[in-house]
Structures are given as structure tokens and as C-alpha cells.
Amino acid sequence: MNKENLQFLKNAVKFMSFDESIQADLEKKMRESVPEFQLKAIAHFSQDEIGALLYFRKSDKSDYYFFNKYDVVVLHPDEPARDKSQTFYIHGGTGMTLREAYNLLEGRSVFKTLLDQDGKKFQAWIQLDFGSIDSNGNYQFRHFYSSYGFDLEQTLSHYPILSLDKPEDKEMLVISLQRGNRHPVWFQMDGEEQQVFVEACPQFKALNIFDGALRKIRFRPDPNRKGSLISPGPEKS
Image (cartoon, rainbow, N blue to C red; front, side, top):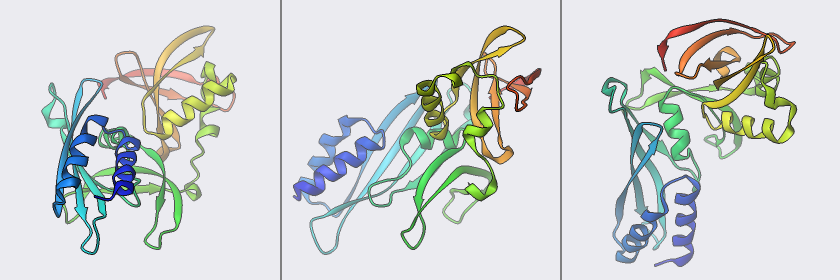
């Protein structure tokens, strides 16, 4: 067994947010020197259960193993019609983390540094297109490059978010939204503070806003960070 390879794969699994408990199974399978194997992982985000199957394959020319891809299924116990699955591929030990994969399957967008077919790095906001499926049964990706014109920090400045005045809080918010999270913030409107949840929406160069019950709110932002609350939407998202 290649110990450096084992440590590399352990680090990759950890970096991608999989529970460290699978590392013992990873080492066991590598010691067995089987040509390929899969490992199962389970996680919970909010009220949802996420199941994952990680694929490992041994090189035909050495004892080196590769972590090629993983399948994810998101289960909604109360709304099975919303269950979704997707295969995410790994390149050079990096790819979508489990949390990012979950956020994508929930319809949110993730900002990521990726590799093109020539191995060159590029950055883009990524979203799954649930209306378009490829030949492998996976949802197609939509990419919003910098040329599209969505600037997250500039967009945030159009909303009355209190924490934007604190650099450390602003940085935390930006990182969270780039990972595709729905993040709680405080709005100050008409002299009152109101907690809402926000998520990045690069397609419309805006934020999606939700109230405490996770009902979508129609909100009209403006550059003066005042904006206007129009109405809570009837749907829960």
C-alpha cells in the first residue's frame, strides 16, 4: 500500500466534508489491494438526509488509487417529490464538497475554481439546470462567468444588511454565500431590524430573500441600501 497515496486520499475525503469515520474503511480497502471499491457516507443538513457513494479505482500501472467521483442523493422525508441525485466528479483530489453538492441539488448557486479540459483554472458561479439532463442521467451545469456581470460584494451593498459594516462579518457572509449556503442576516428597514435569510442568485444578479419561515420575500434593492419589502411569497423553499 502506498502510504503517501493513502494520506492524500484521506486529506481529499476530509477536505470535501465527508465524515472522517470512512477513513478506516478507505485504508482497509487499499490494504486489500482490490482493483476498485466504493465507500458509503451519510450526512444531515437541516431536515434533509444526504447519502453519498464514493468511487475509488486503482491504477493499472501501480498501487496508486484515484478518487474519481461520488454519487449524491438528497432525501426530503416530508416532501419525497423534491428528492434529487447527481454524480460529482473529482479532479486532482478536489471538487465539490458534500455541502456544496447539497446546496446545488437544493437549487442554489456555488462559486468555484474549476479546471477546463486543458487543465487551466477558471472561476465561475455554478448552478444545476433541473430542466436539462445529460446522457448519464445527470443535471447539466450552468456557468456564470465574471463576464456575465454578477459581482457578489457589489450586490450585497444594495441591501440593508447590518453586518456589512464589519469587515470580518462581511467576509464570513461572502464565503458562506459563495459556498451556496442560505445565510441568516439582519436587515435594517424603516428604523427596525428584521432577521432574514439570503442566498446568492447570480442568474438575476441579486439575492434571494427568505423570512423566518423560509418563505420567499419579494424585495426591491437599491444602491442606497434602503430597499423595500414588497410581500412574503406563499411558497416555502
